[in-house]
Image 1: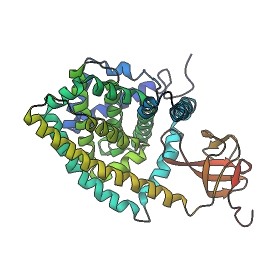
Image 2: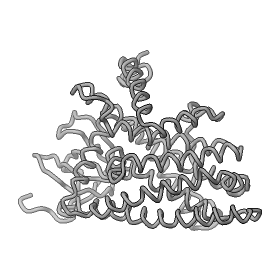
Image 3: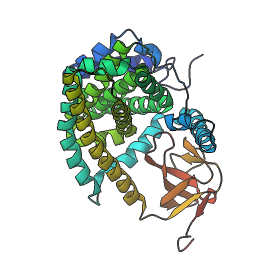
Image 4: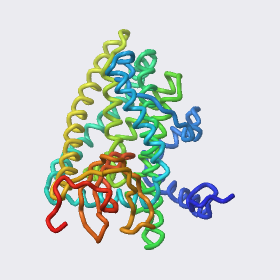
Length: 389
């Protein structure tokens, strides 16, 4: 039986998409060092291709540490509910879903308020810090190896990978959808594929997701060391390649969560230090932690700027919430494709009215980024009813 979804494995466009994936490999070859890195990670004996099929749920480390307490029970229940929502909503992650995310991302990136100007400068300065971190990690593999050989540290990295597995799956899915859209656009307009920054960034995001999931599936300290080094080096290459536009590109791909993932890696690394480090390794460890602290401070500011830009984007629009579960559609008509199903209580901002339909801005529950779509007005409870309604 042939899938109705045209881009599925059994869909009618599968051969075309295969050719486009081959074309994207040519793009990666043009990227130089980052392509070589991806080739190395492919050869690791973990079988990264098989990992893509593995989808496991879990709870955050903090909730696990509080197991048996009332707070822990509430946190675990909340996390389980959120993860269950991801699996329920995932089928809606279509090309139109990604196009809605991109439309909102492009609008925020125009930044009429100037909020993101400081962020761009911060990203530019972070490039050098990440490049230095990549060099430090790459030249001190023995230090990383000793860290990963400590059972508690290796277990924390694996637990993080498993807990974040649903989000990682969405990162990959969003990047893949964005890559499809861009490849189809390039074919339609006749533009050279090599000029597409969206395709190149999507390839990097997908590779980062594969590396992190691979960490969750290996108990071999040597292999885990290779993967940690590969992840940090890939993040360094990504920032270096896109510079001040790194965050803008990630927002357009629905992949801003990748920055939070980098912060998680750094937090675990800094938590513990093995006791058997040589003086040279102790010095290197201090350098790595110092560089991570600098990057962490900048990433916190970068993410804070994103939050402020999101707030600025919606603050001039009337606010409200959904009275009940309601479909969010691509166009203002009942037969239009459903982009997402919003829960009762979901906060929205009304951007435009058209008859009984409202174009609303909402926070996409899969990527945690702002998106927009049309909702039938009776499903919305406005906090303040606009004049004339």
